[in-house]
Length: 178
Image 1 (cartoon, rainbow, N blue to C red):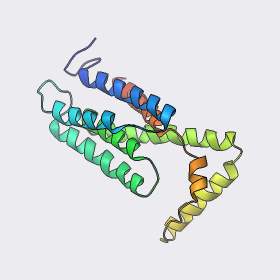
Image 2: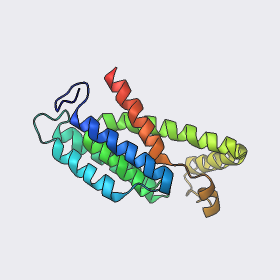
Image 3: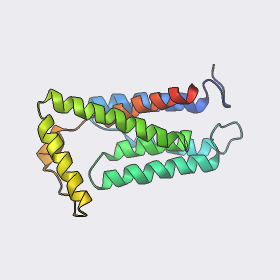
Image 4: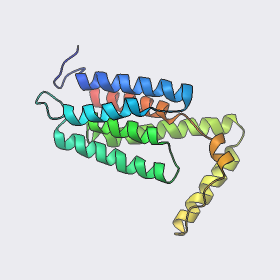
């Protein structure tokens, strides 16, 4: 049932579904999530919240956008993820608002971590990955600067995080519906 108000399935849910499926497909095929998809989605989310039949308030939409943009944008700046992933999550925050986006970030990182662990096991590099993660955590705990990994290391462990965001968003949506 397609409804504009809070219900089983709304307009915002339809936009979110199209957004995450499109982004997951392009991330798998080309390793990119395109601005021509994320920027209109951000604009839609921020504008849609102004309509009285929207299930997200204006404040929740802006909060969701800012939380995702700041947290994931920060990770992008330090090289921890791609800009498209951050913009995708910011778009989801703008459309679904706060607190949805906080749960979405949690589940997306949970799925992404499982994907990274599976890739490390598949490539036979679990020990070296865990050693690098432990070393990074220790340097952060000792308040030293984080030593960046070599580019070849980073490339070998790249996962399509857009897929993790897609699965995490569906997981969040299901939890919200139950």
